[in-house]
Structure formats: C-alpha cells, structure tokens
Image 1 (cartoon, rainbow over the protein chains, first blue to last red):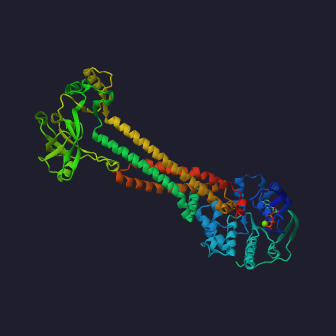
Image 2 (cartoon, protein in one colour; image 1 turned 60 degrees about the horizontal axis):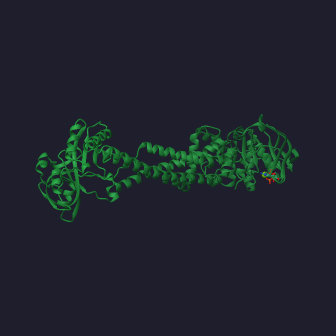
Amino acid sequence: MIRIDSLTKIYDTGSIQVEALKKINLEIGKGEFVAIMGPSGSGKSTLMNVLGCLDRPSGGLYRLDGEKIEELNDVQLAAIRNKKIGFVFQSFNLLPRMSALKNVELPMMYAGISPKIRTERAEAALERVGLGDRMHHRSNELSGGQRQRVAIARSLVNDPAIILADEPTGNLDTKSGNEIMGIFQQLNEEGSTVILVTHEAEIAAYAKRIVAFRDGEIVEDRLVEERIVIVSES
Amino acid sequence: MNFIESVKVAINAIWVNKMRSLLTMLGIIIGISSVIAVVAIGQGSQSAIGKEFEQFGVNRAFMSTNWQETPTDRDYFTHGDVDAIKEAFSDRLAAISPSLQDSGKIVSKKELQNISLNGVNEIYNKIETIEMMDGRFLMEGDMKAKREVVVIDEKTALEVFGRTNVLGERILVQMRYRNLSLVIVGLYKTPKVPFSNVANFEQPSNIYIPLTTMEKILGIGDRVYGIELNLEKDTNVQDTLKEIVKLVERRHGNVGKNKYRTYTAEGELEMVNKITGIMTGVIGAIAAISLFVGGIGVMNIMLVSVTERTREIGIRKAIGARHKDILMQFLVEAVIISVIGGIIGTVLGIGFSLLISMFIKIPPGVSISTIMIAWLFSAGVGIFFGIYPANKAAKLDPIEALRYE
Ligand SMILES: Nc1ncnc2c1ncn2[C@@H]1O[C@H](COP(=O)(O)OP(=O)(O)OP(=O)(O)O)[C@@H](O)[C@H]1O
Ligand SMILES: [Mg+2]
C-alpha cells in the first residue's frame, strides 16, 4: 500500500536547514493500523504531510497504491489527496459555517460526484461515525469530539486507500479521545488502512503497530502487545 | 467541481458576509448607476432634441446677412431677391417667407409679458409647424391690406386673458417706438421646449403678424432681414442653399464676399448632437473612473477575503481542491459581486435618470444594449479585479494555509 525509500525532507529557512526526515524507509500494508510516536519536533507531522501528499519530499521514493508520487504534478497530487487519502487533523479543520453534511460532501464535490449521490454517501458516512442525528448542525455548533467525527466521516467518504490522522485526539478530552479511537479501530476492522500520530501511549495502544521517531529517524518499529480493543457496537 | 457548484459556493460565501459583500458592491453600484444615468440622460436629450428639430422641420433653413462682414445697404436682401429665389427654385422650394423679428411686451392684467413679434407671410405655417387650435393662420388678404391682426399661442392667451376663447379680442403690444393694438385671429398650440425648466430661461412666445403690417409699423422700405425657407423632401439642403446664396450674390454683385449666412436645422442638430455627445462622453468617463475605483474596491475586499479565508483554502486543498477549483471559486465570487452590483446599479441608474428627467422634462433613453453593456462591463470588472486575488488564493501552499491562524 505504502512504500517509502530513503525519504528525506529538508526545510530550508534561509539561514539554517532543518533536516526533518533523514532517509526514512517504511512499508505499510493494506489493512494496517499504525501509530507513529515520538517527541515533539521529531518529524512526525512532516512525514504525515508527505504521506498525505500535502508536501513534497526533498528526496527519496514514495509509492502509494502503485503511484509514483514524487513524479506527479500538482493537479495529479490534488486528485490523489482527493481520492486516495483521508486526512484527519488535530484541529479538525472543518469549514465553520457549513453544516456537518456539507462538510462531509466537500471531498465528493471536488471528485465531481453528483449532488444526490453525494448527500446519500455523506449521510451514510455520518451514520458510521455515530452522528446521524447531527447532520444539519453547523460544524461550529458541535463539540470537539463531534467535530472530529465529522472530520473522520469527511476523510473516509471518498473511500480512500489510507486514512492519515495527525494527533486526532490532541484537542480532545480522554473520553472523546477514546471514542474517536474506537471509531478508527472500527474503520480498520472494516478494512481501512489507518496511520495516526500520537504522543500518548494509551492512544497508540489502540493501533496494531507502533513506529517511533527521534530526530527525523525511525528508532523503533514494533507490534502492539497489549492492545486496547473496543468491542464494536454495530 | 463544476461551474454551477462554484456559483453555489460563491453565492453562499457572499450571503454569509452580507454586509461586507454589500459594501464591496457599493463601488460597482455607484459606478454602474452613474454610467446608466448619464447615458440615459444623454441619449434621452439627444432624441428629445432630435424630435424638436424634426418638429422645427428637417428641411428648414434660414438666411440672413453676415453681420461679421459689415454688410452695407447694397448687400441687404430685398423682396426682389425673395421673388427671384421663389422663381428659380420653384421645383425645390416648399415654402419661402421673409421674416422680420422684433421683441415686445404684451400688456396683461398682472404684468408685462415678453413676446417675440414675428412678421411673416401667409405661407409661413408651411415652413414652421404651427398647430392651430382655434381660428386661422394669417391670410393673403391680411398681407395685402396690412391688417393689424395677430396669431398668438395658447400660453400667451392664458397669461393675458386666463382663457383660450380669445378670437376677436384685442391685445396691446408695447414696442420700442410705439404701441400696437392687434386683433387676435388665430390661436396655436405652444410647442414644448425641453430644458426650459432647468436652464431657467423662459423663452418668449412667438406671435405672428403680417409681414407687411410689421414693415409698415417699423417703417422699413424694400429691405428683408431674414428669409425663412422650407425645401421639398429629399432635396440636398446644403447644396441648394449654396446655389441660392450664389443667386443672391449675383443679384447684389458681391459674389464670394461671404456676405450671407445660412442656418439649417440639420447643421444645428449636428452641432447639438456633437455637444451632447461630448458632454455624455466626459461625464461618462468620470462615471467610468468611479466604476474603475469600484473595481479596485472589489479587488481590495477580495484580497482581504483571501487572507481571511486562508485556512479554508488550505482545508479545501487538503481534501482535493485543485488550483483551478480555488481560482474559480474566488473569481466567480468576484464576478457575482460585481454583477449583482451591476444589476442593483442599473436599477438605481434608471431610477436616477427618471428622477432627473422629471426636472428637465426629458424622457431618459435607456436601451437594452446600454444595460447589457453595463452588465458585461461589471462582469469584466469582476474578472479583471478578481483574477489577482483569486490567483493568489489558488497559489497558496496547502500546509502553510492550514497552519495560518
Ligand atoms: N515549515 C517549516 N519550516 C521550517 N522548519 C520546519 C517546518 N515545519 C517543521 N519544521 C521543523 O521540522 C522538524 C520536524 O517538525 P514536525 O512538525 O514534523 O515535528 P512533529 O514531530 O510533528 O512535532 P510535534 O509533536 O510537536 O507536532 C522540527 O524541527 C520543525 O521545527
Ligand atoms: Mg506534529
């Protein structure tokens, strides 16, 4: 599903060059559930941005679902972001004055899907994250946990190859955070590939595999032994 | 994202920021409404003046001596000239009349009324359109007998008598050297003169008396001050006048001395059109500048809007919006704001021109083409001034846009 070879990312701020990723090699298969951990500034977000095609690597290779990402132009990258990647952010990043439903429809709008099908699929996605009764609320009328559910619904609505989540529970209390992790776990059970960044070991314990970073390098890559498993409600 | 989708998104964004959108439109509204009003009034006056000249008679002309060339006794027109012209150009002349004008005051109940006293012959009503309401115009008999009769207009009748059934009544006219008592034999409809209310000049009414009577009163011999002409339809007015002048010059032995001047309705109309055209152009240019300023306002607000919505742009890009989707979104927004501004401006502009026309008594000339041009123009302003902010939005880097607070 994902393969990166000696991937580097250098931020050139003029006076100093920050090597945020140092020749990373990583392979993530279909249906995996990976937690990326590491101290602040270790390059986790940088990796997520590159994986999510929001940013271009400075060097190395990146294969996503068979595509040679480093060779694509901006328009093609936009299409990849739209169809193959579902991004979930720490700060939710919903459009505030739009309803939850409209927010979830947005990626399908850019995919050119007809309004009718869009609404149907957005409704289904919101049902999946347990927000069937909040569809027409504006996103700024929702709680943090609810907003993150909308964001998850939005990320999965175009049926992406991977779901990337950069500290999705970072702005949430423990309870909402656990609920959100339950949703990721459920999506993973249903076949989605999920990669998430977290500081917290308890959150990482929901995943199946942990990749640890330090100073732009992978220092550990192991399976989760004592996994928290939430019994899916559906 | 297709075009209709972009329009929906744009309308939504405009609606969400109602107040700001309205303020942005203001520049366009003012620009377009002033353009529309100016053009409407300009075209309205042109067609009003055109109509007036038509009423005046398109094939009408007037000849006089050229005072700049200090004419002497031997240069003045005579009745012989008039007869000669009549004979030589009988095929092209509809009517010809010597004319003699003087100003006077009619003694009325309240005050003295300024009038213009016109000595003309009995066919003068074939030269100028004189719409009789009562009685008759001057007749051959009036000329021959030098009767002291007069044809007055409705307005004068109302001012002097307060009524219009005035046939047979006498009016007293004060002139420089003597007073006249004239019997009213005819009443004609006062022609409408546009601008008369604005310019604040009350044009004195024309009243008509037999030329012979006038000559007797003023003690004029065989001298004609001016010649009024009406040419047959489809004659070349300018060429014919040149020929007539040549004939008169030959009779007076002053060929090529430029002793005579001719005035044609056609020529005057051209000049008036030129003047109103220039005025419309100048005011229109000022209006266009205000439209340009309005366009800059649109650009300004769009730039603010782009900055303010940086994060939104980042989000949209992160979930798959392409460069052209963002470009489209902001461009369409700018165009819609401009076009809505254009539509409101058009309505207001028509309103203004109607308001102005109430004062100057000229129906505004608003044509569909003016409106279409105004709308296309405002759309153009939207595109022109929207493209830069839209492009700025579309070029934003998604990560930086997402990080923007
Ligand atoms: N746009 C940028 N310009 C310059 N340097 C950057 C930029 N973004 C990140 N960096 C640097 O790259 C390194 C890795 O940053 P990154 O955001 O990936 O860390 P992180 O692991 O996500 O940290 P955190 O846990 O605090 O989110 C840091 O040293 C950071 O200062
Ligand atoms: Mg980070």
